[in-house]
Image 1 (cartoon, rainbow, N blue to C red):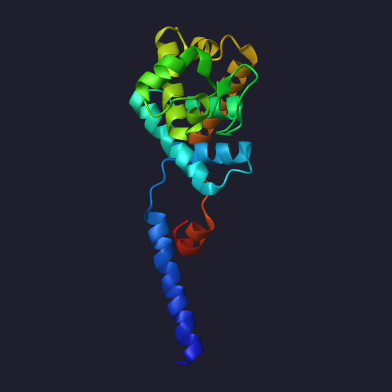
Image 2 (tube, helix red, strand yellow):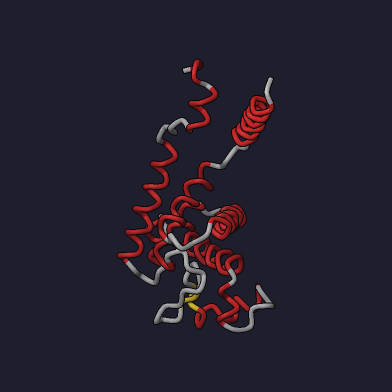
Length: 190
């Protein structure tokens, strides 16, 4: 066996091991779908930041018993996944929480937040926004009512969020295409 053949053989082994390790990782379908939503909505968002936001959305959803798809759709339609977004009305961050209305509660829950610009922190903003969503849901009969409360009666944003949630849910039920690696290593199994 020549040196080139040994190197090629070693590369194939490394590739097979890497592919097996990659295939062994179980990716939460909701996390994958939210990641795709975020990176599509904000193409300037780097993959590390997008993943961080997804992890925060999943954690906030668990803590406040809210659907992560709803949280993600709010983020997309309220801030276009821009942590530094500020509206004309004084809404801040990813979830566009109104600082003037919630300042006292935010400061009580997050003592390190002293001014509105501190509220750009993604974790703080998403968790507090999800808490507000949870409170809105408790006062409403359905998702539409909760979103209307959250958005201060914004029917357009409510409709957009609901449509995005439906699209994300539809992604869950679609059969997944086999990846290149699946096709490469499982050729004879299909």
